[in-house]
Image (cartoon, rainbow, N blue to C red; front, side):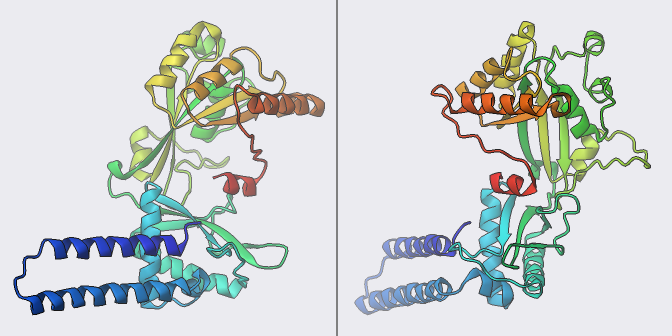
Length: 361
């Protein structure tokens, strides 16, 4: 977490720089007037330093549980800086102080913290959600750790005033042919499950031969939008029919957009895949690996391409329902061995539950 001390030190240095610059640019011939100006500037610095020392001894827990005007203003300034660094969003942890110690919060204390955060986010024109519960995203519902202390992770995201304020993250989807790339994107972006015969991927294909063969041959694109409360824009249910939202509809409602670039997996279309990887400038590469096949075909080439372009890689293992457990274990072991090899030099972090998602984020 970002500490209070570092933020205040930066503010202190900025104030000192401004005052020193003002002093150097001031032309004063009267010695008494010059001394008075210097004394006034020193008093300002001393007052600022006293304010910093006051917050140096104030824990984040005290600030959250005592929402005075001064504390709310300070927390607003702190979160504003973190949101700016995060390009419109930040992950804020309640339950752990800036020094790593536990806040020992009860559920009543947590409710007070939520009220304080609500005041701050309203001033920042932002919303927040508890991402520990990915099903409901309700910030009022929390879980306790083994010591019965409340711990929660809040995703704070600004409400965009225009399309230009949207946070966009581009993800290139690669992997060997038949790894399930287009099917995965169809399920994620269309909100429907696959029927086992290619229902989810059909809407992503652009050419007739792609529909007939089930293989992507061109660079495709799909988006997945989230609002300021971290809810997906499209929420399809089994009993509610909804029309497919256009990209304009999603962008108008979203505060964050994931742009997926669907690339070809067949060796025949390698040049097309290279063009998509270099031309779309992705921030992440999602490597799809079939559990029943492992790292075969073009999977290693796509991984090497992502590493050579210095693009962070996340690996998704698909088709785990189509292979025995020992085959899945073999695939995971092979994948970990390749990532740890001298040519890759990566440490794999396994994501298996909601807690792992929060920790790796």
